[in-house]
Length: 375
Image (tube, rainbow, N blue to C red; front, side):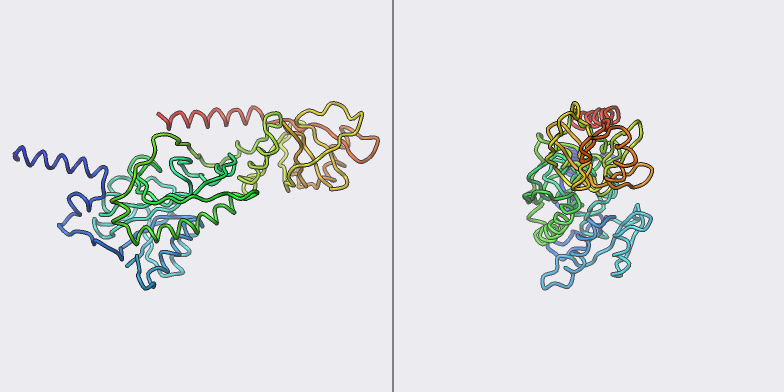
């Protein structure tokens, strides 16, 4: 069927706008029904873990406020025993399996928090006001699934939360609706930071929903510079390279992943997991103890600590895991003592070997991923 040139141009322009704008700002939703112009909204929530639960909790409780931003709330989560599913069942929230079977305009807006799946365009287009994402970083820094871990690992002093609209095909590239900074205190772990940003993000989400139309009208595209990628954490990140990493580097690494993946090194070709990190040590190396090179490990009897030399100093650990968990004294008596003895009886030192090959492989893969995402 032929259409007029003017009508064709109009349809083409609207099609281009659909890729950049919510449906409500172009043709409107299907079936000829415009979405509401103000809250409360019908919301479909996508999430899985405890970080997501905080936003879901605040959305759920907001329905009973004096000025509710949410009219109805339903949940999409993944199979298995996940925290979001448990919270939804406990609070009588309808749960959809992934991918959800929903119709266009059934919900006004979607919300994604720590979901882990890329939403296809056909799902995004079913929400007249689009889908929002709560992301715990100052985008475009730390796009990807593990921004909090990489924030701590790299020693960032400032981070924050971004509420954005998602776009199809790529994670964390959509326009920003709201963004707030957070100054990181010393010695904060990734678990600590995650808890703080979860609360901050939940409140930002509710505030955004209260003024959603205004936020959408004033949204801004992400900067074309400064983007970094935050891949999932893995065992390959945990290998310590004593000759390259400083005391601060190791401190950041432990605070980032230590609660989930123990730091690792090699002792006589066997993997040793380093536990009970105690921070920087101030060693006095006895005369005649030999050359002190990165990886040198000493037993400090007074504090029952294994102290290891790195690039610019010493870091301590209270226990290790070899065949079984050993205190510093146990490791000294069973292993370190056999390799080198000290006349004073106070200290002894051997050598931990860096997992250089393993760490180099991770660095190469990480840099390759960064290159791919910047092109």
